[in-house]
Image 1: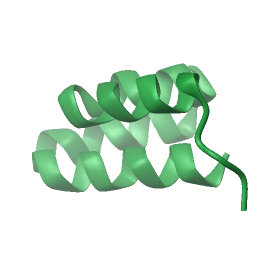
Image 2: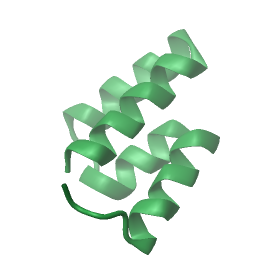
Image 3: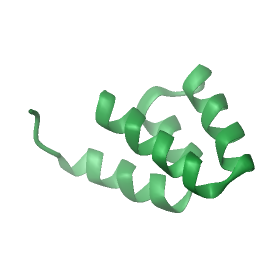
Length: 58
């Protein structure tokens, strides 16, 4: 299991405040980014969960 570095912590904070920004910082503009925008529009919590999943996965 890898540790959490400073950049991951910043991404997680952005993911809680604005989920698409956290995903963008992790993977850039791509499928995961657009999916996160869609999830965030449907509900804030699904967007946060997806963003933290993407950050944890990478």
